[in-house]
Length: 449
Image (tube, rainbow, N blue to C red):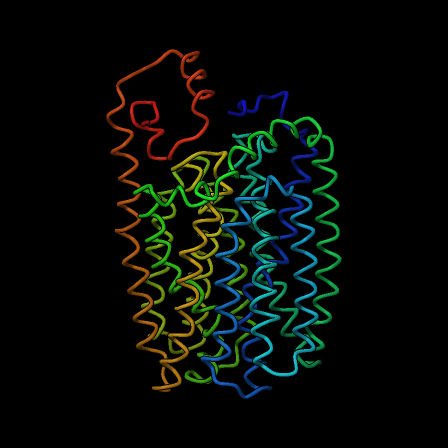
């Protein structure tokens, strides 16, 4: 088992800062693009005339793949290398955007936007997040703040990308707008990759042999990949995330169109900006708060607020109420982005964050695949959004007690632990048994055999 990072094994302050900046810039691009599909959705519908459910499915499949592909990406990120994986993701992302702009029809977007774009987002985002949890990369005391600062890039990206895309769509076609965004994203990603490489180029040589030995043991059997699903606590966490995922992307896909068609309000720029600004503030605030409050408690608040706000959305009739919804929902959504990896770190183990966080993307992916098309189908059939918003909001609220069970499961495992062993024996046991289920690690301070 790898040694815990000491002061001497940590990167320098400048290198840690470069890592945070690199992760910040990647999240500006990735999450900015991810959350701007609602703006592109309106332009695509006006240009192609395709059904709302069809275009929503394009975004939902992209979201599905971007979440589900984080599982294998998190499993292999240390073997491939943080810089190399980020470079692969950046290349795929830019290639997919260029292909989108030349799509001959809306159905071609299922390949370029959904498939290529979804996989690229997963690879790039996983590398940018997992590098912060790498052994000796960030000081443990500063980790929540570093994650919050890096995640605030996603909120800034949501604002800037949506504003920029709206401005471009006023003057250009959606195809030209995508090409211009592709060039700007390429420059930002080049800076991010350079900062990432400069931070890790010396550390790689020191830890390469230890990392390779650990990967050969961890990745030799494909069962290791799915092993966490045998843990009850992890299953409950994933059930809660599935319910949450059903409603998660609904406003980002349908809110702008809902405001225009049912409320007669052309306030797409204001709504998307509020989603992004509040999301950026939430990422930073929750990153700071999680240094003092358990991330699991903060995540519970996020679930409550997000479910309740979706239930209240049909009652928002004027511009002020819709803007208030955008601010509240964006804040809760931004909190989830920064808190989920910290919750995984709290409930399980630092060295397994990349793997478990990736697996946790699977239920969110399935939920995101189901939610927006369901809402779009209800709108196509009825011409109204109210019933669909009520339904997905109620589903998100069901995730609250399920998540509580996951946290209480951990507490019940921790409670009967009266055995206190000598630290030297504990270290010896760790070397003898290099890995175990997360729930087993807390039972009396030893793994069950």
